[in-house]
Length: 252
Image (cartoon, rainbow, N blue to C red; front, side, top):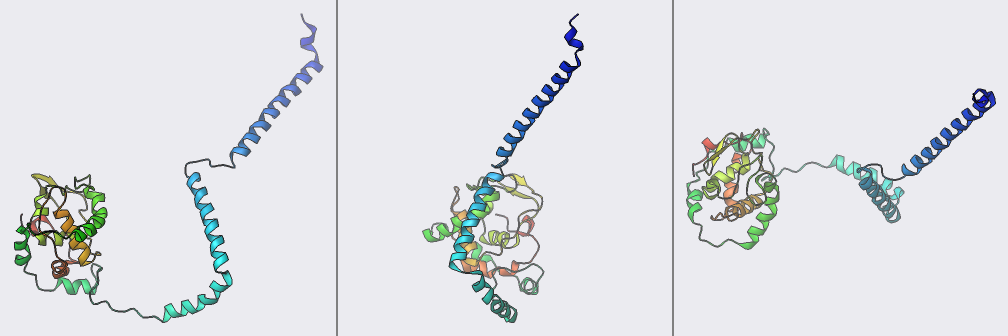
């Protein structure tokens, strides 16, 4: 039998050697974690670091150009001017709040006879102004989020490419743009019925709506006549009404 196994001093020394080794490893781990914590620890921290650096540079540039004292000296003047200012009535608002007095006034206006504008829908041989198509293409970025940038349709909107509604009566498209669309609609023989439907885009100006509808009617394999701003203006009374349904539109 080895007498060293029962040596108290050896056991005492072994215990402290083990405890010391553990503490050394713990200290090394703490040092590693300390240095690693100084850098980004997640994917969110990496861009945040850049933003903070940019903000610091921007703040420094602003401070060098305009002092805090200068800003504070005009704050009271600007605040008093804003409080004393009065809103100016807009005769032809490009954005109308549903349910507002203006919306109710427009909705109560007599129905517009759309036969003239719809009869012009078939006149698709007239040349389209390239400038109008350029404006419409820029506006279509919003539409393409749902309908697809190539008009192919998506998970929440039917296709525009080859759609009989796009090539049909102009008044249909204007009403959909001004009021939105709800309920089922058949496009190229397939029925679509998305929850919530399409939101109204009446915040756009008459020129913007006319341009984007002209672009849609002459893109993605479609061919149709241009939509005029005055045609959109004639149907501004549709703004504020409930979302239009396919049953209210003229069948293409």
